[in-house]
Length: 208
Image 1 (tube, rainbow, N blue to C red):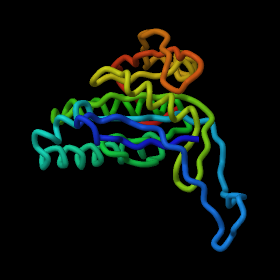
Image 2: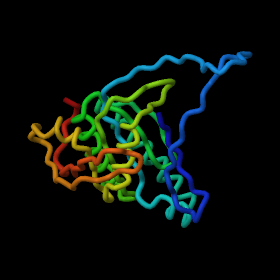
Image 3: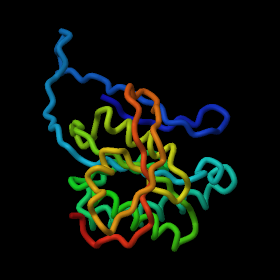
Image 4: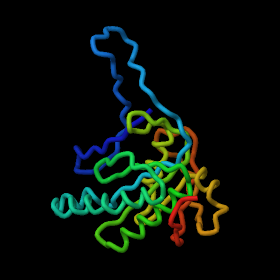
């Protein structure tokens, strides 16, 4: 199980590092058995969004970069709710959310990209992957989270890239178009992943 943290300590370059969660123990317990925690495993679409060039932005004008961060948050929160998504957490300039519907995640991403373009202050790249992940204590874990993040890393500015699993669930929807990007070997992922770019089509108001 993995969580993500952005490291900007070297050369002012933003790099995401994968961290294993720390085990928690019952107070006063001296053994080695970790405390049991409730969790659920669900098949969901995981979406990562990230602001293009945010590290350079904050180096040039910190106050402006912080306003952009706030505006990005203001844009995304209501749109994620509109498409029946769940805001999981914000990590620096990145936002992680989940959706019960793959088409809902794509349509949400398209609307967010549209709003960011209309605003004109920043650009986003977005990655989406469909997988079974573990939800525990208001967070999410699993290799599927890593795959969504790695796809987002590869996505071009103002583009939304998705895995082959998302593509297979959404290809039959007439309001969505896809371009095959190719097969990629992602960091810390054993099997290569097929990646597709989502066409900028008119998105529906709600997920289906």
